[in-house]
Length: 310
Image 1 (cartoon, rainbow, N blue to C red):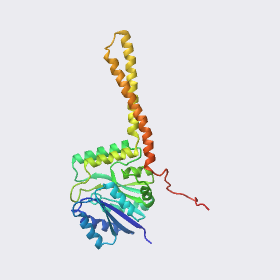
Image 2 (cartoon, rainbow, N blue to C red):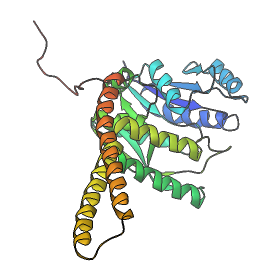
Image 3 (cartoon, rainbow, N blue to C red):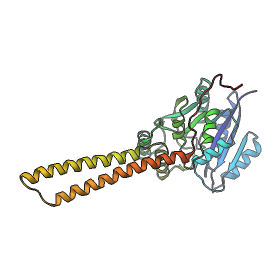
Image 4 (cartoon, one colour):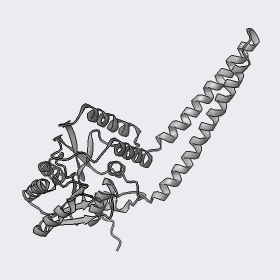
């Protein structure tokens, strides 16, 4: 029996592209030597997207459709698709055709060669403004610098996940999800597949700068304690400088004299530094509580050999 591939496609107000997108995605999946299903997740669209999906599903039994009661966001739409997917491998792709469906074959090839995760790495971004390219450049590098786990530069959610990876995803039920960070946290064998990201076929992007910043915030807060560490180190540096200032003032007062208000400045700086240190320590404890509340697996097995109990 042939293996099954699940293609997960989140959609939000995409009436202008849905039909053309389906034709290309279906052709790309049909060209592979696997059974396949295409799972559309309608993320609370307010246009005629759902009507298009009903029509497509009525004529194509390999198409399954989930529709949210309102807009819950891209990351939860992908999660809903993963919950419903039955495949031996899952492919996540956006509907706008910026990530070419034809690249799915390259992701599958990497999976066949042993990769647990095959992710698309963008070499070039066509049809985007200089501002969009600049903000994307800064966004990915800020995310990579602040995250405690590896998040490859210039990558999105366009990727293939082996079933064992998807099963771990489904055990992580936190609400503020960041799939790229979750992939990095898991480990597993991840392989990049380079491609040129195309111009959007129709319509406008649904990922505004505000949504990108929220996603970055979720990624940093959910997968890094570096902001807390930075607060603690900043407080320590302020305290050290304040103490050095006190020493300088004592020497100055004993020799040439100094203005009385300088003592107040150093005292306030020392107090603020101590507050920052206390916040950093308190934040570290809260971060550990947060880790426990997330309920993530304590560890993940990639493989086990001769471990069956008799």
